[in-house]
Image (cartoon, rainbow, N blue to C red; front, side, top):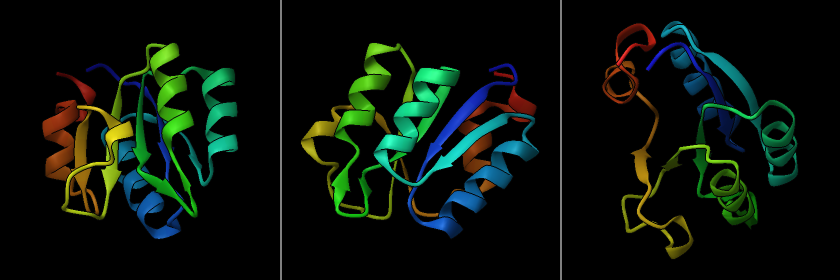
Length: 116
């Protein structure tokens, strides 16, 4: 994958910062992090990302509306979660990233320096 604009939708500030730093170190432009659905939807509509990392739950909300909009805009999604259980049904069969992202895992998903 070439250098991309990647949206982060994450309400945990530490998780968001870690993912942002890792993605930027791979040469990507990060949109967000968006801590809630409304912020995420605004970024999708305004900046149309090439890829989105979306947390399954944002505070007391689910990310279902964000996932639906990503589908509408043809934005691929990797669901992020701290849970090792099954993903909620609204997540469908999307790829999943569990726990804090390690650079090696992101490199495996995106390719070295953003090239796949």
